[in-house]
Image (tube, one colour):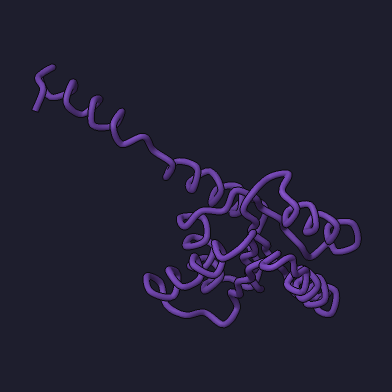
Length: 142
């Protein structure tokens, strides 16, 4: 199994660097910065990698639904049943996928749904969270 992070500019590369620092380097996770100076070379690399390894599972994370990177990756879904495409990538999502990939050869659809749900929960308005905590302690402001 391989996890591919691909984004406009350097977001994916930065996320990979952060994963390396927190979880450790994993050769099965690669990151690509697309469209730097208008280049589509990274898009081509990902497509070629997927098409040449039809027996391997690929989980591709993109940055933005409807963005050009995601739209290009959608094209892979037409002829490659080994691809799972997730958009709106964030660090908790990438971390959970990396950790899960270290224990299984393939990530099931149910595991993927669970990981996505967990990563959504990581998106939190801290101001609101603090307000709720303050009000729950005897309705007093801390």
